[in-house]
Length: 405
Image 1: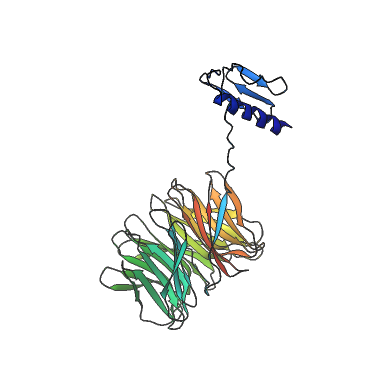
Image 2: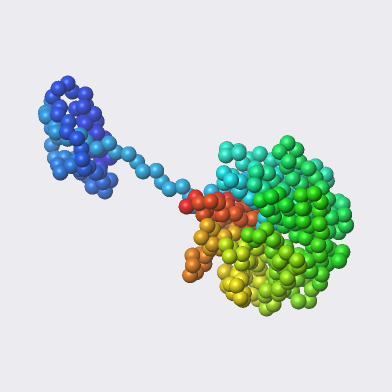
């Protein structure tokens, strides 16, 4: 009944506006319509739908309000399928997703071949970067200052570390390290001069290694050599020097950290309590101090953990302890330096996201449709909103989620 009254008074108002000369319309300075009230309010006068409405031809001094519907807010998270099981892929890293300077997503991934997915603002475009069989696992992506992609990945057929970059017209493929049984657990970073740094695992010697492209040649370094180097994650400080988080899989089962000071690698054992340091992800803050997210896989714990170096010591926080959580972590800092973490909830098969507000962690389930959230990679855009790529294990999809607000 109320909606019928709204229609009648609106139609009457339009009719009166069309009458020649007999209607005097004054400027409306303050007016409102409430959907919870049967009255239309115009300035200080009121026409009540329960009262008689003036007949056509009468003089009316006020123009009725035009009512516009307020559109609903978009969902908090948008989710897209990037690759609908068209290709075979797995083992993406915490660096597989990057955003270009226009905040458009780029994703490196593979398994049967190496692929590069990029969004042009309307559609996803998927390029086959390396068509060699059995390449592309452990893909990590970095963009240089010209938004050109650089990808480190594992060639399972040759059992080598492999590297691809786009030179503006074609993809160039290289083997940075001639040794075999090297190249799993890669991570990549590129500085603003185009120098490339890749951390990776040497399976033969059970060592952590770093390959550095100087602009003319690859330089190889052994960073740590005691059954270490799984789950590497690399980032550059303001002096363009690499810092690496990684897992010590010897009997120690520790989280470790390496920092290049320009002359040598400085190694620290970060966390030694239990089986800690799987699925590491590193970010460097504005003071060049490292932050690391990782999984505590100790018996009867299985928590998501976070640590930061405050300049003199490591500080630790348990982020999420609800079930078996914290697999495949990816860490990013927002524009105020606050940490954000994407990760997999193995108990429920969900993709989760944690954000620090300065006093506590806020936990969100981003996707719970099927078994989703493996191999997460997180980036925070220039407006402070998170973007996540991940694997849908139920459908074998590559998916991408971003937060609207």
